[in-house]
Length: 276
Image (cartoon, rainbow, N blue to C red; front, side, top):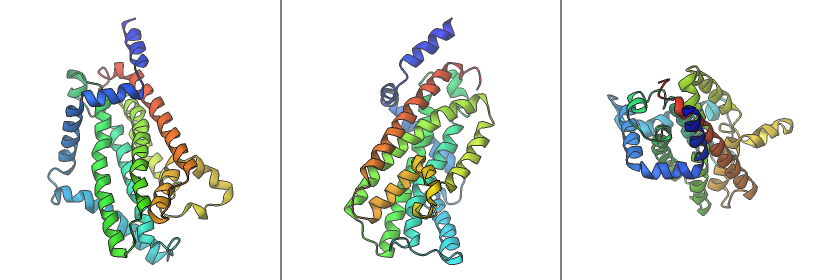
């Protein structure tokens, strides 16, 4: 009976407004966890925090060599393939790394979950926000490559910021239930790794969505990451705002995923301490 009441109470307050209030109330803990995650991530590495830039740079060089030199992939719409690839690769790296890290945020919480009280979503959010710093480094790399390639930085590039915010909300919405489920079923993290690999190839990171056969285009229309990646490229290279319908669709999906994912997370939260 007590557990039922706790679950009912948790669900009654499980909405993004409560989540935002918890983030603000525990903002110092959230910041501490982000800093701790960064230190752990690069602890005892030779290059240290330089990996924030080196990691996306190495991936960019490998993909660029394979597709531009080996497969002779031409520039896309007059945009050098290196830039075309980078604009899609940066948000994807953030997304995949965030989901993978956040999936293990609760199961790796250990004593924090069992001893100290705080809203458990703080752990998952900290895993995602840690990767936002990597995302910032990737955007810095993008600006450098644009300067080297002589590509102008258009005003429409400002649309990257609200689009990235939408992507963060979508990522959090996925991360919450995955983090909770992985606590009860530890093989979830392996399924997530497989799912991200498959998702990568149905997202137009390495190729433009225009080359996808019409009969398969609906898959890309339903894929939120496909819409976001296409909107990023639109904002960076066309000089005009991305299509309104794509932006509104991405916002609606992200908010819906965040709402449902957060409620699922809070419904499982009362049993966290017994399963860590």
